Length: 528
Image (cartoon, rainbow, N blue to C red; front, top):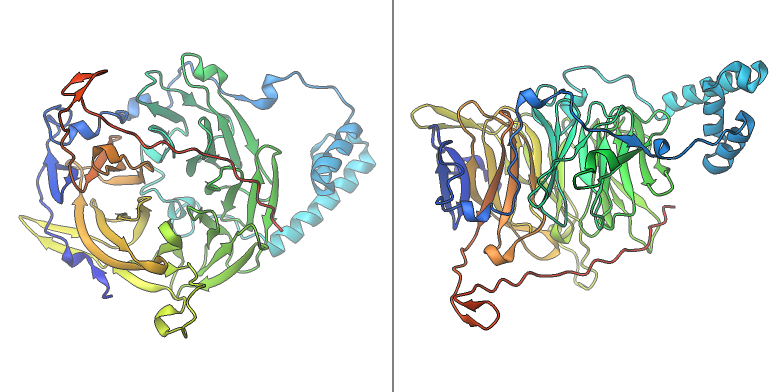
């Protein structure tokens, strides 16, 4: 299959209209005044999605939101420092007990014990920095947090990250003041989550198979929010801070598809931590080489875990239950892996941070029933798929699309790929088709998505639940630099409601049968 190029797209329009929908391969545009008009052909697809518009005047204002740690919900038990150290040593190990003793006052643990603890902690930190740590991150430019995260203009953007709940139309939005707002169509009150440790938020993700838990990657570590929705939500929501020595700042958190394990990554730590959040315990996955870790992502089936380092090395972990966890090590020729996402059937897409970028696909599924001799096409290798070299489209003015990739999202059905660029105001929507053995067999241009005049996209996310009753509706949510959050519906074929007679609903009713899935928890994977 030939490498797909941005030249195959139609010339985007250069006007004040925003791209608002793709319905049966027809691109719909609209001006700002008619965006909320119910007579628009795309409006019926957006009625179940919350309306979100963030303005700069709501940032860093005094409001009635309150946040609590779980420790604030219970009365403290007054134990001696030695009982506390013994308990920590028994539950979390000797190293953690040494750190607590070193951070205590000398009078509490006696000057001799404090002197020994501080010297041991200094030695442990020295060993960690020599083996697993890298130097302090630069504040800006290459290798900084803004360069690593999947948000364009992360430092100045009104909206830093968004995340759809995997099972319902509930959207979490993080703003520049590090507050998280939860938007839901059925709940008029917007919970606002704020915590003293919630600074420099880089990533948020909802816990699968759980309705009200949200993981937050921030400068201090990982915050696990338990959110109460309703009138008293701001008072009852509480957070647990998960942190590990020399594992900060955290730039990526991702849940296992069964919701029992959480992965966190830090660019200053070569260890990837696997958390059991119920016990507040973590198991480090140590690998030497590649510097710190930028981000990780799970495959939808949970059998593969991708991790990208700050250098040219990335790893694909086999996390199957029947085998011990082990990783396949890969390298890219130039730069590092900037973005990656899994599709159905263990298909992996990734792109490097070079400019111009190029998207590769890596098939990971094994054909264990094929007894024929393997051909060169069956060998596992990363294959270039999409060339993202900048293209200048000539209309009334030059319109430039392409370059370095900041974010990339693949919808759960594996039919649409959204690409956000670092230096282009357009989002490229590509149609993809998968074949056997997790191979991409066809790529077609979808459309370019642009906002209103002066807007650039900051971050994107697909709504993960395909709504078949609306004609296989796929929704891409886009956060623009103006603070406007847009829901972009993608419809392959519109469904026209048929009139029929029904005794319970009367005549001319519309029968919409929603697919119901029974979710069950899987047993916790043992990490060896």
